[in-house]
Image 1 (tube, rainbow, N blue to C red):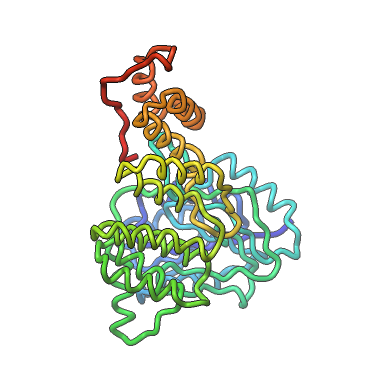
Image 2 (tube, rainbow, N blue to C red; image 1 turned 90 degrees about the vertical axis):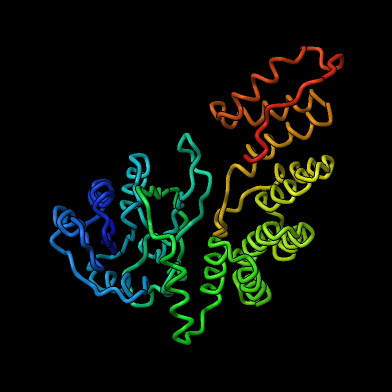
Amino acid sequence: MCTITLAMIIKNEETVLERCLQCASPLVDEVVIVDTGSSDRSVEIAKQFTDRVYSFAWIDDFAAARNYAFSLAQMDYILWLDADDIITPENQQKFLDLKQNLNPQTDIVMMKYHVGFDAQGNPTFSYYRERLIRNSEKFRWEGAVHEAITPSGVIHYADIAITHQKCGPHDSDRNLRIFEKLLREGKQLSLREQYYYARELYYHKQYEAAIQRFNDCIAHKETWIENRIDACHLRSDCYNALGDRHQALCSLLESFVYDVPRAEICCAIAMLFLQENNLDLAIYWYEEARACTPNETSGAFVQPDCYNFIPNLQLSICYDRKQEYEKALAAHQRAAACKPNHPLIQKNAAYFQTLPIAYKYFVTTCDTVYDEES
């Protein structure tokens, strides 16, 4: 059985740190906490779980802080978590099973990271991250922001999920500040950093600047395919926000140059046509989304709802507008099978109950109750 160090960096995490350590510390053989300047009870809480609590002067560099934490690890493998991560009971058991049976030749264990959720707590945005890493100098973090360890060697994809559960406000400007500081200091951003800098510009509604940065990422042949595809998607959102629907569509279509169509992209294309009430093209692209299969092990940012729930929900709108009520109901029922308790499903179910059973005789004079912003 392998041994594992949990290595974390923290700063002012008193609201979530105990929750994280309660679920994670029983799974590992050692806990190393590196505090980067807390002014709350974070250090006090950390010391309830380990005597290996250290200080590190914050220098606007997440990789530097994580590498210091990794340098203190003494076990075979290192698990990293953020303070607002949790491991659910189901995944705790899976983790213990992995620890018991992990092939000793494994270098990196990839685990799913759930970072977006619906109102019922179901994951809506996930991707795989390097989560359990062999304790070796060759595996070290890179990147001041959105830091990462490049997976290499023997890589294992585990059926284990880490859940990211934020609690309370956070500094939404921090990452942009760090990137802009790096640029002022004359640092050349890596391709990955350029991509994430463009995302920060997009989040801050600096759309024209974001488009230029996304263009640079997409044009570079060595940019990771998944980043290229997501850059096409976010660049489309920028164009749409600026009122340029044609370029928004072209940006989405360009993503097909780099890999097979993704449901996330197909849904975005369909929505552009639905907003123009071009129902036939919207239907075509929502059906394409339904036909896609998520390739989660590629490292893609996967939105599971785009592969089933969303296209079926939106198809019911399209067919209803075309007065093809049997198809509208069938699409609604497929969506309901995915999320029977979703508020929109309940709302639309009430609408469909107003329709006669014999649809071929039905003539509507009322408006539907769909929420097209879903």
